[in-house]
Length: 300
Image 1 (cartoon, rainbow, N blue to C red):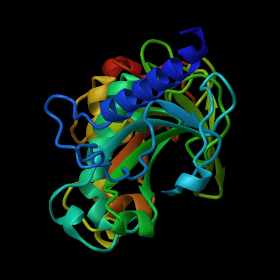
Image 2: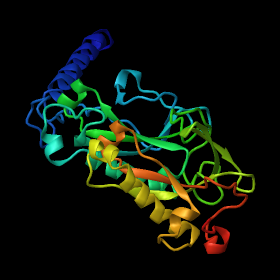
Image 3: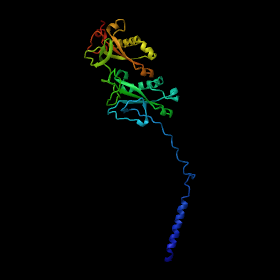
Image 4: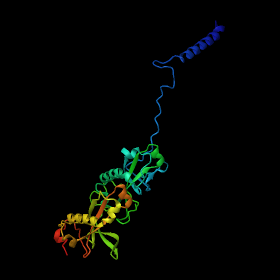
């Protein structure tokens, strides 16, 4: 008996192996035996879409996934993405991407304008700010990308609208007393032509003050350029309301106007906000004319 034990053990071991092999062929409950047909189908990769609520170290009108870069808004940056929207309707069905500055961007521009106001707490036209639209690349558009990004930037002045580096988010930047908001200016002239608007405190001697913005909806750029008297008239109405004086024949003897329209590219893209300023040609002012009334802004 002892001499045959190894054979018995070997046989048992082989029998166990056979059981294991057979067990490997048994189908689990509910299985059809095909090892691959129940795997989930991989979804197609989604097109690149930039983020909103982030800041960028560079200004660009076209965003490439390969060079996309964001920074903490607490660090130096040139732009802040305040909204990412989606093209719909006829523009979205076009094979070719709308070009930066084209009339096809009007709806996108209007959406950007509204979202910028919500983020800032006021109309960005009333401050040292500029609003730009960034688009996907042409290959990305043809590949299905239909987004647009709304970028806000701080500018140096009303005359120099190139973006400058800033730190901190623009969220709520126009709420309360903000150094970004246009106030009083001492215009510098070359002959009878305005050279630039030097910002000053309203308690310092000055000849101009920002009074508001009007929107010119129905004119082409060429028509607007030829209708400077209409722009002057619209601004004078804002001046009268701002200073609380009658908008009548005496108004030209109280003040004149200075106005800043958008650039031609911005106009054709859909920005029609014209900035208006009260202009005091014959005397220096030493206070804000807001609510000044006929005594504060007399006809001379």
